Every structure is written in structure tokens, then in C-alpha cells.
Length: 157
Length: 157
Length: 157
Length: 157
Image (cartoon, rainbow over all chains, first blue to last red; front, side, top):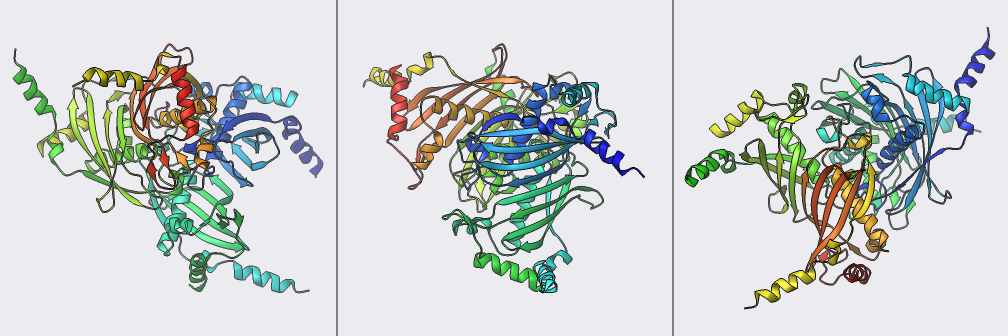
């Protein structure tokens, strides 16, 4: 019986990135993203979180579209989001994200969407992705080399 | 000290609607709702869930736009969604929803999105709404009469 | 010099469908389709026009997704739209469409978006599509048999 | 009969801006903006054109949301768009815009959407806006002072 080993493992798969600064992606709320209430429609944040993920990967040297051309994609399998305050039309916001943990094939991303001055919290969220082989239409157990490199680098930081 | 009373209360605020048939809202996946992978973009379901909520209220005699004209709105404050399978372009889906519980000012809605033949489960989700007074920009403790009537009817079923 | 022949040809390629009743696709304006002004965001109509096209083809026996699986798609190459009045949140609208003419490989669709009682005109538009071979990434001169059948039927009406 | 005067007038109302460099707004195509064909859904460009307009006004000192708070908005009344080539997922594009002419209360904007290296033309478009008084729900004959200042500056360049 070695519960310690299991928890050690859990600690290992929890990336050190969670102690690192967040990746920042700056956005602005345009009219097409508002709804009748004059603020962001609640689905807008889902799009922004995807954009932040794509930009984060790009900053690490992985173009998401290259990954798709290689026959992989990373669909969202779970998404939990809490809305604290609303972004006003015309306002800038910072979408902060980081990879919080790896659970087998599941990549967990953490989000905070804040005002430009970082004084107001709009949204907190967790998004879980898996990697899918587009031909086999199956979740891959082994991440593509490109992605492994990135994760390696994150762990090694 | 009466913990029993509290749990009785909890049972009372859990609407009987959870034992009732779900409200069904039928949708079809159009090209503009797909993404590069040829299936529904994961934010599309957020829009469908909103549509189902609006249609459910309408079926109960409440036009959401009337509510807004009266000075109220019902923003989403929390949303948890799990993606099980993907809707293919051109396919019909049923967005099933019901009010699962009331926690003070929080209305919890439950969702299941299924294939037209109800044999495949695409998405399960929970969405929490509050009611906001648009002038005061504050959450109301007392639901507007129109909404109370609807909830009363649901409880009385 | 036979300008008459040319104009005869032009008449032939102008489908009789233009004298036929329009195809009707009924929609309702949901919160996610509004913007800060409380009415439909102007891009919403573009999505509705696509939906009406897909439903029109379906009513004629062509599933757009089957066409894509066969290796074809019908992208929009030109779109002209005039906004007359706005659809209010919660209102129903009828998206009326018909194939107005064929110019070589170009299919011209005509649109009128009206109120449910057909007393108010919201939008008039023309949309031009071509048929593209997805493998060759080229516009096809010869329409796929499925589409030809449909056009034949429209002409023959 | 003075057709010359009329054409002189036409020249005057055609802003000198048309001879000026275009305003540039840089965008990138994210997954949520693609459709099943792996490229930009054709409505995506409508959103980008709105963003470019808002950023152009901002660069001239007018926050569109301030204008709305003052009781004005600038809805699109006409939109003509031609699709030449498609933006690929992950690619950057430049949305170029300029105010091409004023016809009474109508402001005509011209658009070119190009690849990042300006070697490929994706889209050309014209968009016509009017200014509406949100309280009276009527088109204003007299532009709000803020906007007049901006136009004055454009003419004076």
C-alpha cells in the first residue's frame, strides 16, 4: 500500500508552470461581442480563452494549425467557468492562462480574465483538453512530439 | 440546533421539476457553427443552451425580452459543461433542459444535449443564473412576479 | 452579330424560380445574436441567410453536408446586403430566399428578411455562390450531378 | 442647369482621405472563426471590419462606447463584400479601411483585407453607416460634435 507514491506522482504531473507567471493575452470588447445588456455576451469569453491558448502555444513555438496539418487536434472536453464581473464595451481585458496539470491524456488549463489594470476580476475558468488523432478519430495516449517538447520545456523551467 | 430542518428546506428548494420530463429544444448544426474539424465549435453549445432556456421560459408564458423591458435580466454566473461526443454538420440535436434547483437567488439549470433519436449523448451541463435589476445593476433577492409565477407553477406540478 | 441570342441566353439562364414563391425559413432572435443596441447584430443576418440556403437545399433533397462529404462546397463569393429595419430581441422573422439566376458557375440567391406577419421588411440581399472541388481547390465548371438535378427541377417547375 | 456644380459638390463630399494611407488593423484567424472547410467562415470578415472601424475611430480620439453613452450609434445600413481568397487558420491578415465618402448622412467606408505581407488580397468591401439618435430612434441629420471633429480633421489632412 503506497499512497505516498501515488501522491508523489500526482505532484510530478502537476506542472511547475502553476508557480510561474501566467501567459497574458490582451483583448478588447467589440460591439459584435456584446449583447442587449451592453456588455460581453457570456459565450465571448469561451472564444477569448481559445485565442489565449493558441497564442500561448505559439509563444512556445507550436502553431496550432501546424498541429492540425500533422493530423492532430486538441478539443475541449470539459469547461468550468465562473463569471464575477462583466467586461464593458470598448474595455481592454487580459486573458491570463497557464497549464495547471496533466492527468494522463488530459491537459488542464487555468484561466483568469482581468481588467487591463489587473484590479478587477471578470472570469475564472478551467478548461480540459485532450489530443485527438484526426484520422483515427481517437484520443492519443502518446502526445505528438511537438507538444511533448513544449510540455518538457514547461516542466523543466 | 435543527440540521434536519435545514436539509428539509434544501429538499423543498430542490424543484420537483427534476422528476419531470425535460423541456426539448431541437436545433440543427449549420456551417457557421462548425469549425475546421467539421463538427460543432465547442462554444456553439453555449448559444444553444441559451436558446433552450429562452424557449422554455416562453413555453411557460414568460418572454425573456419582456423581462428585459421590465428592467430585469438573468445573466449566467456559472457554467460547467462536459463534451462527450460531437454534433456533425447537418445533424439535428435535442437540447434538453430543466430547472434543477433554487439556491437562494441562484437558479440552477441542468442540460443534456442528445442526438435526434436520443441514442447519443453529446453534452451534459449545468448553468447557474441570477436575476439582476438593470437599473440598480444589482442581483435581486426578490424575483420579479412574472418569474415567481413560473417557479410556483413548476413547484406545484 | 446576334445580341438577341445573347439576351435569349440570358433569359434562359435566369431561372423560372424567380416567379415562384420564395422558400421560407423561420428564425427567432436570441440574446446571443443581439448587440449593445438591443437588436440583431448586423452579422447575424449572414448566418440566417446561410441557414435558409441549407434548409432550402434540404427541402429539395440535397443535404449540404453530403455535398461536402462528396468533395464539394459552395462558398460565398459575393454578398450585398441592405438593412432596412432591425429585428428586436425575441421577435420571429422569416428569411425568404430563392435562386434568382445562374451566370456560368455563379449561382445568385435573392433574399428578403421580413417580420412574421410579412408586414415589415428588415433586410434585402443578394448572395453569389460558386461550387468548389475541395481536393483540387478549384471552382468547378460542371456542377455535381446532385446539384444539377436540383437546378433542373427548379427550371422545370 | 448646372451639372458641373453638382459634380463639384460630389468631389467636395468625397473625402481627401481616399488619397491617404489606409488605417491598418491586424487580426489572426482563430479556430472559432473557421468553418468545416478549415478557413475563415465568410461572416468572420464582417466582425473584423467592425473591429477595424472601432479601432480607426479610437486612433482618431473617438471611443465608440463613449458615443453610445452619449446616446448615438452608427449602424450599418449597407454592406457589399467580395471574397477573393480565403484566410487560412492561424494566418495573420491586415484589415485596411478608410472613409471613402460622405453622402449626406451616409458615411461610406472602403475595405481591403490582405495577407500580412500585403501580397494577397482576401476581401474587398464597402460599408455604409448612418448615425442614429438612440433615444429618438431616428437617423440624425447633424453628426455629433465628436464625430464632426474627426471628419473635419480627415478632410483637413
